[in-house]
Length: 401
Image 1: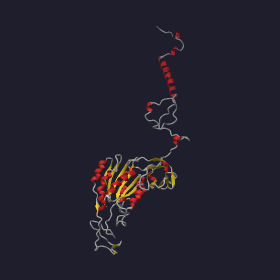
Image 2: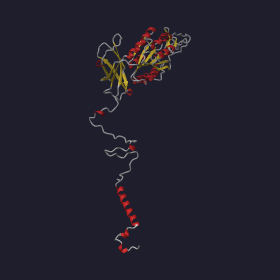
Image 3: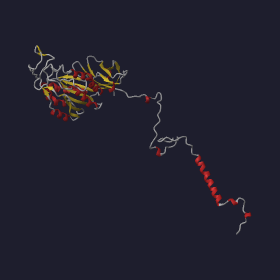
């Protein structure tokens, strides 16, 4: 059948396959253009590692939760109590011993009966405690005593273990020229007893024999200081005196004991339990000042049992002497006891630990302190009359907690 072009409706000649294709392409283009137009133009390249902002009321996409953005810093609002503390509070801990005129401990004092001064300015006691503390103790024993001193100490050694309780921890160190750790810290009292029982102390003879053929000038039977003396029974010759030379490095031994205690907990009372005749050479690697600094910084107190009231005979010109023991005890808030017989020593061992365990503990935050100064003095007073107070005499700025 033949179609008559004249009977074809107007515009029908455009409805061809090509026309339909062009129309479809046009529709697709029209539909795509608005989709791209809706995307916002980038305002700048996004920094690596940052996240796009999340609109209010919407949930962040799960994949964005793996690397959350850091919280924005806020400026503290004035009057906000949560922002009042802006730095670490520095505290000074002061163990205090109080005795009556008879030397007995006084244990019924209250907080308001104490006054604390630092650099002569009264300080507020922010913490007060009168409860017994467990001890961390280094038993430090002079291992070069005269034979008459070494004998009673040797016989009394095992009684030291009875002075400590199950909550205490004890280390054992002897010293001559160098400190020697016999046993590290242990709370096993049976083990401490065993170490003390097995310990064999060294000693030297206190008998001196001068050889007239080598002695220096004499006046009234005494060797002049610039003369030459000799020693007997294995002693070492010392210029001017026929006395044994001293090799005990007391300062180094106390320093080493303090370093052992440095890392022990602040919930414990840290003490050096020193048994010595007080002899000390000038050959220490650490000075008295350096050693004292380390003790005060670590809150360590020295409790000494001196085996003589006086500096050992013949040793006054070659070393500091017994005063070192007293100075360490006084400066750190400890104490010094004197004994020479076995019976007295055994009693003193328990007295030392009882005193150390039952000290009062005062804590203050230094006010009006000159921070340009490293050392600051401490003085503790009590309002009750006729009492003796022992406390550390100062602290170092670098040792504040």
